[in-house]
Length: 167
Ligand code: RP5
Image (cartoon, rainbow, N blue to C red; front, side):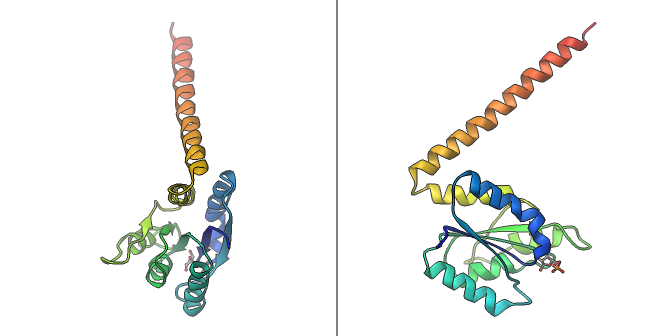
């Protein structure tokens, strides 16, 4: 059984969610990916979540747009940590999905990331797994060091550009 389950309400969410898959691959984390809807296939969605949890899956990333109940519904079905990704779609461009995902009632938490925040969802899943995995902790530290080096390189490049522009 994969450690992370990525589930999305429709294949129209895949363009956003492939970034989550790429990020998990970067960290060598096994995942499975699935389309299943909270509204159109609710029984199938709950059955998948229960099977995933019973089989040893550890984190679920659930992405949906519009009246996005997928993450909350799965969080109610299993006690695994669920990371919700509100997808930008429809007339309200993701604000509806953001509110649906983040405003969970007390007792059933969903860790909501930003609208279309597939990369951060995957990183949060890696961080959850890293609690019990020193190799993943080291990989996350290296990832963040690379981010910091990137900022410093940009700062140096900007300073050089401004110096070059000076009369
Ligand atoms: C949601 O409705 C899906 O997660 C998707 O973001 C949105 C539109 O779905 P489709 O009509 O493209 O299948 O349930």
